[in-house]
Every structure is written in C-alpha cells, then in structure tokens.
Image 1 (cartoon, helix red, strand yellow):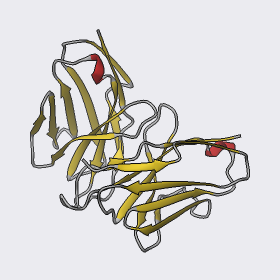
Image 2 (cartoon, helix red, strand yellow):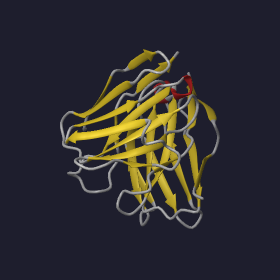
Image 3 (cartoon, one colour):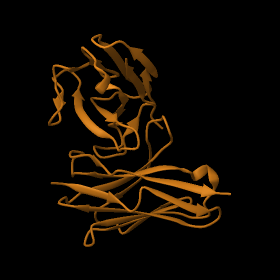
Length: 112
Length: 118
C-alpha cells in the first residue's frame, strides 16, 4: 500500500537558520508533489507544487526538490522566522489529480 | 487566491443527533470538493470526493449512510454526520480545486469545523 513518511514529527531550529523537511514515499509514482502549511485549528494552505520532471522549485524563501529515483522531496525554508512555525504537510498527486494522499506532517518550531 | 469557507466553525451536539457542515467556494466554481477528517496530531484522512450533480465517492472504510454528502451546486457541498457518536468527534475540513489553472493544482482548504459529540 502507499506510504508517505515525513522526517520527524517535530523539528526545532533557531531563527535565521534554514529548515529542511523531508518527505519520503513508497509504492506510489506521483505525477506531482505538493507542500502545504497548516496552523493549529485551521485548514492547510497550499504552498508549492512540483512536477515529477522538475528537480527544483523556488518561491521566495521556499525551495522544494523532487527526486523520483530516491522517492523523496526536500522542503527548505531559508532565513527562517518564528512566524514560519507550523505543521508542514507533503501530498502526492496522480496524473489527473487523483489519488491525493497526505503525509503525516512535520511540526516546525522556529525559536527566536 | 481562491477562498473556501466552512460553516459552522465549531459545533457541539448530543449523541444520536445529526449535524450538517457546509462548504462553499466563494470566488470560483468547484465541480469537485473533498471532505477530510483530522484527529489530533494526525494527518488529514480523505473521507469522500464530492462531485456536483452526482453521487459522492467514498473512501474505503467510510460509511456513506453515516456521512451524507450533497453537492447540489457548483459552490456548495454539505456533509451531514447522522446519528453522531462521541467517536465522530473530530476536525472536519473540506477543500476544492480551482479548475481554471488546470486539473492539477493545489487544493484550497476551508478553515475546518470542530465537531464535539457529547
């Protein structure tokens, strides 16, 4: 069965450092991989989408890589700020938007 | 970006009663909406896919007679939890895809509904 793992349940880093979150998957060949941010008691907010034929995608302080050989995506937040503290979810998507599966999430805390 | 609203944001009901949760796409038409359930410190679990004008598609293990979904218009989908029990207490979140940018985009999530069954 499909399985998605995110590197750790919680990650603490110091303000100004780069946060790196990992998403690994098995038994799935996604066409797309997405990253979301979720704050407590709120719905997730879409951040970035990367296609299977893309190696890297950037948006402001965010960078996502996608390695279909390793079946892994890395999500980086550079110059992290306390406001970046949240849970970050990766999601795998099939070719036509089907088989949408979320990872368990990593709770990031950026310490001032 | 696209906005999805949910109502109510929080509801407390007694065991055995039914609760209806509304999900609306405010500035776009959503032919497909999704309903998720999220337990504390766990990820989102897809319950069903709601298609406008047709029956919803339920994920394995989700009772369609207990979780009634109606997608009567392109901007509104409702989830009714029938004969609610304490184990149905959870955070329910809907989402929709804006069809304009193409078939595969990020989903736009509602703010969620916290259901507590006493």
